[in-house]
Image (cartoon, rainbow, N blue to C red; front, side, top):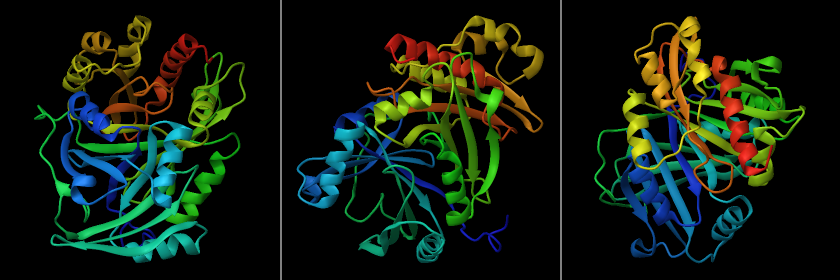
Length: 370
């Protein structure tokens, strides 16, 4: 879809914004365990009395971690309540757009709930235009135009040196962001993205595609016209036992962002470095690899190395992909990450769903939540 015919053109993901209990410690964890670079900060030292925020980047991926120091406005009270209710989690999937005012007006005219009308922030680095709309749960989409700005993040933030000097980059972009919603709500939110943001349906996984002996879920993927922004949406399905989506909804306290997929050019180096830094990944039984070569064929990474590192592989008509999933990165079984290396395939690892969900179920059983 060309930009001339795209009713809601986007440039890509601008930032994944997290509300956390301790932003300083979160920034340290993502610096050391994910190899990200601290680039900007706002807090008491910069005149921000209510919150502390740390901005980290890896290639084009940007994470922002914010915690409340002392709530004195509705924004601070919301962040405080959010962390108390949900634990550490994503509050904002910010999207860069060429025209914030047009995007906001289009979204609201087509049914979106506006949270912040378009406004400007300015400093010596230029001007950023922002607006925000509501999506599932307490998640929002901030619409961002930073084409007239050359500062480290937003006005009010100052540049900061890395917490630790990063080594080789572990990932270079956000590939997709997955949302979990309540039973019966997936199609409602798919329609929301179709109508409000002009996104189109990219993939659909239902029934046996996405079920094990014990649990099941349904998933549909929406994306913008250029496929730069992709949002899979999951809902639980009726099954013998509690699905991973049910567990998430219970412990998160409602709908929210389940996992963020990060695009890497070298999944082997990434997994080795992250494991050495203490990141835990889901386990995959050896039996998965016994027949993998028969249907995936040859990949850049030899089969025995995939087996050693527990990396999954999948192939479709366009090519193949390699992927692996972390365990939840906080004590609550909520947010986790995916590392993905694509070679032509624009899929989401359909051939791995059964192995992945069985791995998640093993972890659920260990937590007593299956």
